[in-house]
Image (cartoon, rainbow, N blue to C red; front, side):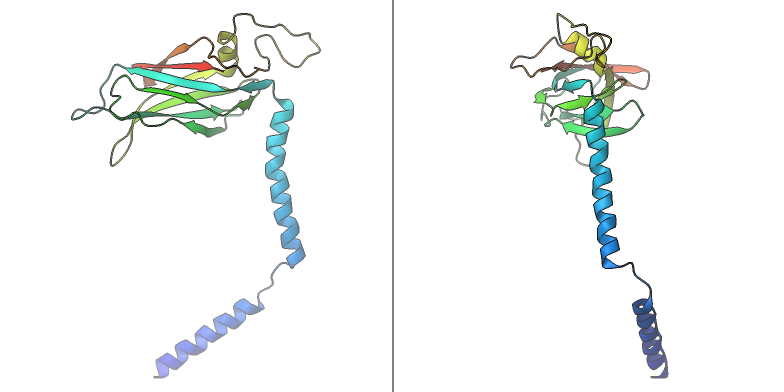
Length: 200
């Protein structure tokens, strides 16, 4: 009983200490939250202002030359990452899983349009969906500038005063897909297949 009483007093003392601990004023907390929101939106707005244009990627299919499932047919899917010039990397889209697609999955997946700046890259990583862990099959990386050049038969040169350089212009949305690029999928130094992408 004495131990229980002692524990009760200690618990009450801790509660009193927590209640007496200084807390930032409500108005200060609200201002801090607003500052965080403005900071988060500033990075997006700043990127849009400095962008050379927008691109919409279309991930069509893959042709794998290595089987990552020795028992059944593979169920591949792909994840699209945007790699900025500063090295930051973010996931921008994911295809559906082509169940039974095995070594020739077809997705025909359209990604949401993205602002792009000088030095940006796109990474497409292909995975085999498994019940326990998804197995990595390989990745392909292409610069946005290269993708823009391949997506148009008539590149437009800009004047020196324009911040857009040759082969880096704002891509207007189109109903048909441009020239497809067949990129190698690499797993370390091994080529495990190819992925076909285009630009809308």
